[in-house]
Length: 247
Image (tube, rainbow, N blue to C red; front, top):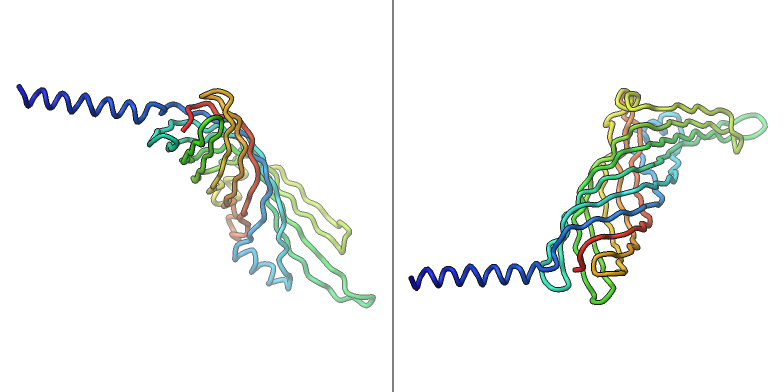
């Protein structure tokens, strides 16, 4: 009987400790709007194609904007520190660019030829973004996240523009549906990695405004036949609201 009482007492104490330790644990939902810029990173095949015509690579900047919903659960580890396991769903609009230029000698002087390539995608985004939450007491909190996932392009556009000096000499705009993307590009999804740091200003114990920074990388689709394409390094801001317990 004493052993049973001791066992039950141990279980009771463990449950009390657990309830105390995880008192602030709970469901977490974040809705935010990320917006930023990216810089193209052409792959080897793209650089080789530029060299083959005697050209040099031109790195272009693009941008991204979207709406993200992060849904999951925050586990309170100790007072002032918690770990969130969040799934990420959303819409993303991304543009990527690259190009090359070369010089042609003519009797009246050299002329500069440039060709610019651009890709635009409207995508459904799905991923995982764990976060480490730090509470500073009162109305202030901080979260550091790192994760990744995939953006699935549903539609888009391919743009090719040629220039003679600063004069546009030709332009080809091609609208892309999902089937076009899967037929012309491989992979037909955009893999991404992401790190973020967010400041939370709490209005109540469970509602906060979010002000954040993010940086990451996109692995954009490449042409199936030639493997030509570009990846991108991106960074920007995100603003939103967080619904969930404080750390």
